[in-house]
Length: 114
Length: 109
Image 1 (cartoon, rainbow over the protein chains, first blue to last red):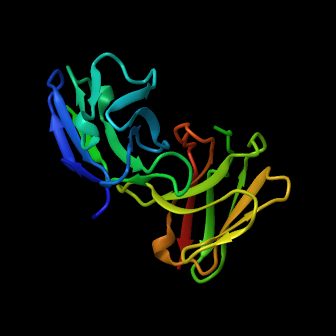
Image 2 (image 1 turned 45 degrees about the vertical axis):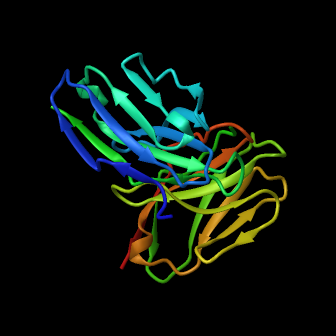
């Protein structure tokens, strides 16, 4: 296992287009998290899954955002009708339940909306 | 999650110990303290965690005060590659991590 994998690493899209990001967690991890990070800020929580169930969503996750984790394996995060304010690094993390040793993060997908 | 407070930035000379403080006065008895760091354009990397006792691993040491209201991350011999943003996080079982702005550590040659 090589850790948490995120694709693509970079995405440039025109305003109004839809984009989808993929996250492959560590195989035995049953929790998967999405965070968003803008320049100079710490990561902000968006949503998390326990297996295939989406258990919590932040109010930051507007109705243009949707996340899925079919079969409790990989996850996708889709942004519809992108806006310039969606430009950010989108981070995925996974963990084995809660508690120590905490999360393992991927390298992120950097989205630029032009 | 316990709210944590960290200085926005710190400098450290290469080869010296870097001591990064964190206040977490609202932490509960069951909350672990986690430290992560983030090097530019990468995802956060786990460093260490602790509950009550001091902890040490190959990357760092974590000193937690007896009242658990604060902790210090120690990088014993800082190198230029330790330049990063360091995050202190209080965790409550079952809750998602809440990241603050962290401490930007600059290791100077």
